[in-house]
Amino acid sequence: MIRTLAKSIREYKRSSILSPVFVSLEVVMECLMPLVIMQFIEVIQREESSISMGTIGYYGGILIGMALLSLAFGMLSGRFAARASAGFAKNLRKDMYYAIQDYSFSNIDKFSTSSLVTRLTTDVTNVQMAFMMIIRVAIRCPLMLIFSLAMAFTVNVTISFVFVALIPVLAGVLVFVILKTHPIFDRVFKKYDNMNRSVRENIKGIRVVKAFVREEHEEQKFGRASEDVCRDFTLGERIMAVNHPAMQFCIWLSFLLIFLLGALLTRNNLSDPVQEADITVLIMYASQILSAIMQLSMVLVMIIIARTSGERIVAVLSEKSNILSPDNAVKEVRDGDIVFDNVNFKYSPTAERFALSGVNLHIRSGETIGILGGTGASKSTLVNLIPRLYDATEGAVYVGGVNVKDYDIESLRNKVAMVLQKNVLFSGTIKENLRWGKKDATDEEIERVCRLACADDFIQAFPDKYDTYIEQGGTNVSGGQKQRLCIARALLKDPKVLILDDSTSAVDTKTDALIRRSFRDEIPSVTKIIIAQRVSSVQDADRIIVMDGGRIDAIGTHEELLAGNEIYKEVYYSQNRASETDVPAKKEEGGEDNE
Image (cartoon, rainbow, N blue to C red):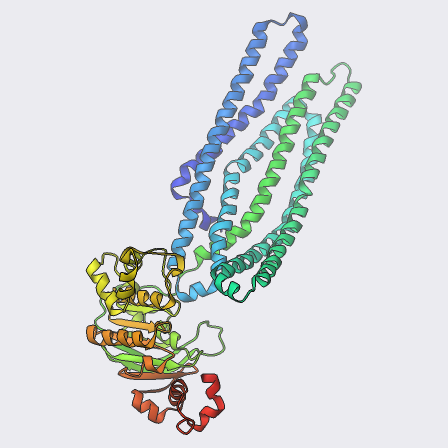
């Protein structure tokens, strides 16, 4: 984990090294100051009333100089620590974000959206804070502990054993806190994901929530998730709260033992009593030693929290895409010819059944293919294999006569344009959204594809036309307008294969027909695959594929399927509300459900 996280330090290595260097110099100054104070006290005791202002000024000047040096070193250490930790967090977020961009769909399926957001925000912040404390406080505290202990032994060996006796007690408390709290924080961040999921679902679906007057239900759901997080955090904080009083107890106990041992040593050796200067300096070192241990305990607690966050971050960074471009990859897609050769597919190696089974299919370049089937028939799964969003578990998929696994992924996906079921528009102007298809597209090219997608008319009706700003998620356009913009964006890629995955469901039948006619007239060489729920959307296709339960049930034209395929006939008649005499007997059993 540490090796993986350390790769994100990169250009901030210098700051990460300078911070401990300057904090070490700060510690040296702080540990030397009590010795100077001790010498000053001894001079005062020795010379008493005859001490000169020059002597006072000498020692005062040394102490002020050391204090200023300590301040300067501390400020420099803090500055470099802040730069290193903030830069480390920036690189960490960037590395995670870039890693996610390279994920295949199956990789993305392993992490929920809310979990990835939590890892990019809360978890990175925890690791950032821990890193800053490690390169500063975690360096300062051990050095302060070692130097102060060494200095204390030079003052009085016997009394200094007080510190040696107390350190194991404090270490025991720290070990107890670490062992008890780590499982709690490991659990609490998973609950954080659930809470963020609740927030995300509510905000994304706020219109549905209000339409169904379910605000109270959502408030209760969020309240339960929030209370769950609060309960675990409270338990963890309660255990960690043991740390502070234990430290305070040891500090006061050390003071008491120093005075007690000092008195005993003086009584038993009146010829060489323990000096007041020695007691004063030992108390100062006691404060430094026990304060260092207390700060170290805080660092360890932060590291406990950050360890869980670090593991979650590393899980994202270590996840490697299982879909990669091969060496010497093919970068040119010849045409839109598509072949499925005995393809079987399942989403997980541990899945009990295949989502697709025994698919053998040849789609000729330039054909218009319709795909029809009930919910769960694996229509989307079938077309997802063409641009290699998933890889076939068994068998092979060919595009342009080449196995899709032999293509450069970017080249393949640039020539296989796909409009997914969930149409997504990003915040920005219409032009900026459309140029996702081709970043250097001219205004003329943009207007042409919008006319093909029947989007130009409604865009021209906007006051700002193609410069109209689209809100996040496309909330300021209708569902049908959003679908047509997404189709135009796909067309701008100048693809060899165009896949519309139920992408005209929100479009009226007249506009749907106009879109299909423009495809037929304007892009005849492009292979067009249209997944639809409406028979009218696919009935003029060259061929129609009927799918059922992950298998191809039938392939044919509208007339052929209407004459010989029961599934197609049932869907067709239910949608066209044929008279009961025209409807097969089978419809009476399930026609209402289909409708």
